[in-house]
Image (cartoon, rainbow, N blue to C red):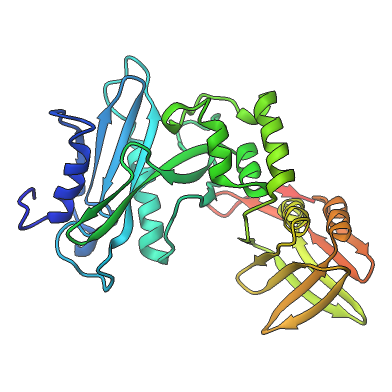
Length: 342
């Protein structure tokens, strides 16, 4: 599948990699049964290049490798291919298989939901990034342009090389309260090429990094405009508006509301059944708009919301806003409750 008449998209990716890896043959892992033929793996293949200190993974299959099928002539397929840089031990001759499965899982998410990733997006992985490394602190990820590959033109439209960067949950919290690109600009001094290292500690423990995050949040506020959570609901009790949240997510939501409102911005909190939008205002008021509750808060009220929204079940009054927090139950992949919060 290297004939340009058959796979011009594939060949365009190869051409972009050639200057970076001249005359270097990567390790390539192909898919036996393609997604288009009913297989489980959306990616047609993953090439892996061995660098002195890391593995460089590049996917084939998020863009249009063969024929042009999408309606947008300017963009090939989903518009990107994943890249992933993973720290490599000096004596490591083959990349770990979990990383290949991880890339297929991310691709499967895009193919099944239609939700695409872009630079600045971020996700909580709900567990260690590597299933066989339960002690690792790398439990979330953000996305950035691969600085060595960038964006290319292909016969089927543009393709962005979108690098996955593994981060800790402390760093993930900083991304939500601040901004992914700005945080990565700080972390890049400690993470050359934004390599994911499963053995590293959280960089938020570094005094200079912590100071940069604190200053950035104060100066810029949060760029996170919306989040999805398991529990958010609302109702009216007389002239009191009740907002119900899960104990696991309540402090995170409230911190984001305070960070957004203090800079005149809003936050949309959604679940599968309901949605609440928090907006900046001079004083509290609440109104329904097309089934969404809009809660208007002053910066002071938002700060008080962040103070009272603790991970403990109960009812917490803030003037005519009542925050109702219910217990959260964390379940393993088999559906068994492994942790109770609140």
